[in-house]
Amino acid sequence: MDFCLSPKHAARQIEFREFADRELQPAGHTFPRDNLRKMAGRGYMGLPVPREWGGQGEDFFTYILLIEEISRICASTGVILAVHTSVGTFPLLYYGTQAQKERYLPGLARGELLGAFALSEAGAGSDAAALRTSARRIEEGYCINGGKVFITSGGEADLYTVFATLDQSLGSRGICAFLIEKGTPGLTVAPPEKKMGLHGSATTELQFTDLVVGADQLLGEEGKGFALAMSLLDGGRIGIAAQGLGLARASLEATAAYLASRLEKGDQVSQWARFTLADLFSRLEAARLLTYRAALLKEKGQPCSREAAMAKCFATDLAVEAAIRCIDLWPPDEYEGEYPLFRYFCDAKVTQIYEGTNQIQRLVISRDVLKTFHK
Image (tube, rainbow, N blue to C red):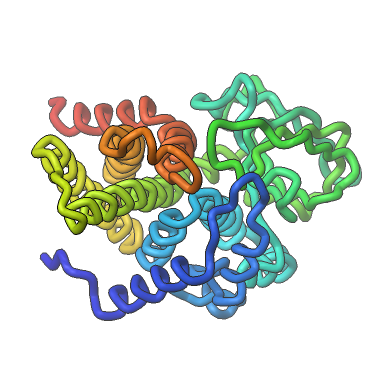
């Protein structure tokens, strides 16, 4: 058992960190097109996509290292990249036909197209099988009606993976996945939501009104859409765990640097402040080990639902706690100008909610634990 990064992974981690430090800027309230353009120029928008489809052919673990480093500088850019890759590109890579891949995958991998994922509804968040958006077979293919909420990159994305049911009475067995392009007649995008954090990431509602797609836009098989969506959860959750790592590091590194500057000036740093840093940096290492282990299991194709849930829950809870406790270590007269801790907190909070709330993660973990010990 080796807890050290391989030379290759260590070199890529340094590359990603230097790129993020040098090239990226926090998004503020503007969609970070310049950040995405720079990442596309380095091949990062298709990092784990095979080279034959225009990607870099890197492993899943390398992709997780990238998400962590990007999110440390700009969490909005981090979540846009994570959604674009894990649920915007992977569904097409894993389940698309040859024609679908040829049509969309190279553009997604090169960052010429931006991918998004439309599953959640007002009455179907944690219980995704209860979705009500409908798909009806017609001569031209399918007619889709309904709506989705909290769609990352809504209005900005070029390609949406949209889930709708052919028959709600069938529950999850009636759900299908469709590829819907930006600008398709019948697709309406609401104005971006006003959010607590991640202001650079557009989050919107989508409405479908008699939207017609051809049968060639069905992704996977009829009635297999729910299974398709669930198959992506582990990878998505590990990605958000990596985002939590990046945000926790941002809070801790900024605070440690601030306290170190006080020591250089001859000021005292209290035992309480020192112990707070000790506790949080220790938990950061625990979160990193959980996240990296889950990523390695995913890369090897081994079952990792429990590990992904543990990593997501622990790392994102830490991101929020680290921001809160670090704020307490700064004097009020520092809460001005470019003070970053408030942004880290506001950005971190949603990581406990999307890709399955942390309450759902705890259900996943406890269910698996009880199944293991139940005789």
